[in-house]
Amino acid sequence: MSANRGKFVLAAALAAATLGLAPAVAHAQDAVPAGAAKAGTASARTAAVAAADGNLYAWEHSWKGGRVAAWSGNSSNWADRNMRNQASSVHNNGYPGAYDDVRLYWDANYGGASYCLPNGSYLMDMRYDYFPHNGAGGGQAMNDNISSHRWVNSC
Image 1 (tube, rainbow, N blue to C red):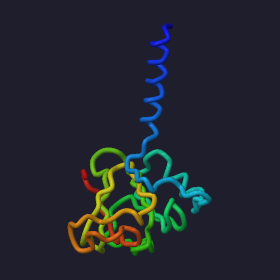
Image 2 (tube, rainbow, N blue to C red):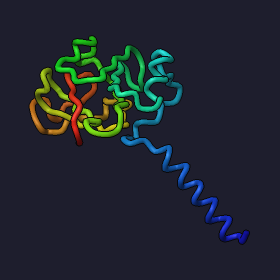
Image 3 (cartoon, rainbow, N blue to C red):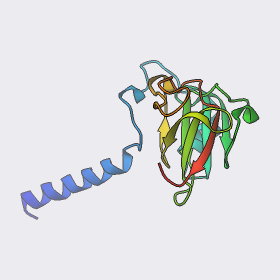
Image 4 (cartoon, rainbow, N blue to C red):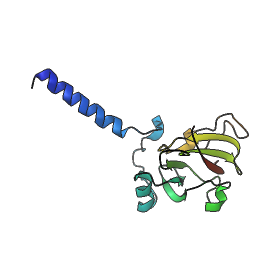
């Protein structure tokens, strides 16, 4: 094998491996702060990194820490899981296909500003994420401000 061919094969393998590890939604703030522990139960952490299971997950703390709630369908009021205005990180672990994206709403009953979380995406620290200016609550931090969600066909 020529030296150039060997370099090409190595570069192609590294590129393929790198593409498989990139998150769908990322922020510069997504690196775990030095000395920070990832809280939460082992089963909640495992569920959030497993293959698609059809659920939207929400945690009360950043980095998937604290209490966790999961929904397989729509929720007009996150009080149904005691998570209304409590979430600091979310993960869309829905099945790929139709209605695989999740629209998160500032108010109950799908009201106010909304943010669309694509399939397979997550927000690890919503202190740095804001609702777009598309309704009441627009421009507000998403952290501790999500009240409802619904599965949508596309973002």
